[in-house]
Amino acid sequence: MGTTHRVIIWGPGEVGGAVARAAHRRPDVELVGAKVFSERKHGADLGDLLGLGPLGVTATTSAQEILDLDADCVIVTPRPDALGAKLDADVIALLESGKNVISTAAYHNAAMPNWLTASRPPASRLVEACLTGGTTLHGTGVHPTFMVERVAMTMARGVSGVSHVRCVEAVDFAAAGSMWGGLRRIGFGSDPAELGAGKPLALFGDLYYGDLTGNVAHHLFGASMDEVKVVHDLRGIPAAERFETRSGFVVEPGQTAALHLTHRGYLDDRCFFTNEECWYLGEANAFRGDDLPYPDREGRSPIDYTIEITGDPSIMRTRLTFDPNPAASGTDRTNPVTAASVRAVLDALPAVCAAEAGILIDDPRPHYVLDDRVRL
Image (cartoon, rainbow, N blue to C red; front, side, top):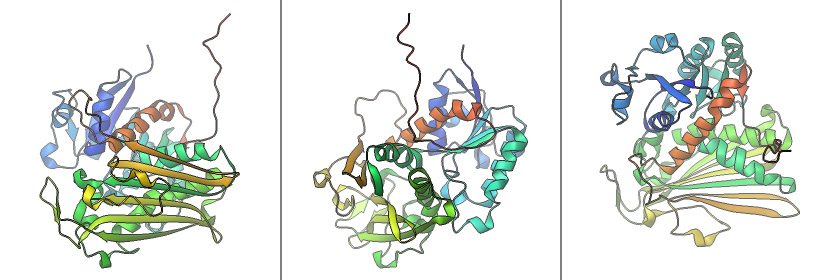
């Protein structure tokens, strides 16, 4: 039999809960603990919280109880507003206790400086914790990680002299609920004129899209993170039609019904990377990006990505869509973006648990294995 990994879920909400449900279905994973943040969940069975029935795993609000558990890895899925020194302190304690950590909302690029760096422990403190505990830290997800660090960087190997990479994510947020702290908090329903680079969404975006900007600079150009300049902006696009979510959140015509968040990366004065988040409410208010190479995408999937690599001797483009599968069976109706993040986490689990102590990052370079299908 193969290795079984003992796993703790830190924050079994939308993403953490989806990870737990998927992990429960895998024979190589044993769920052994759950860190929750609501007193009403303390002492509950994790399986009952996830709609799976009793699993014999007790959820707790106590970080110390989690530290005392015997586990191989803690999967940390915090809300964006939890990022910062407190999360760092928890992760450092987990690493020092001998537990590997995989995170979906931080540590995609621990070396990248940003506006929050000054109030956090230095990245070397994370490495120190890994060495103390003999553990590994890894940040992953669908975006950052899968879309740019894997798909786009793999595409970039098809051309020479890459000068610019563009990634555009377009998502209908109508069913997003509390993602990123809730629709109103990130700017939906506001006066479009009030949005700009200083708003919380644009700033917090640095902790995701600024990180991946640094990863592109590292993978393509071997740049150090202090050479990379990141410029972000946020604009609101007014609703063409009144929209109401299932939870009762209403956006009237003229109020912000689409958000366009951009992060541009520069080396000296050369823009080498542009990441765009186009989030909207309902097809009538859809905004999927400006000057797209695939104009026929209008009215298509509620979740799609455009990737464009400008290089020599050509420009490479692709479009990826996530369409809900009406034929899907079972009761786990996970958002496709969340499901892709779950895959990234669980795929990384064996490598993280087997790696030497330190911070593990994705490597988009070609990898090769012997073909064991052919035998003497």
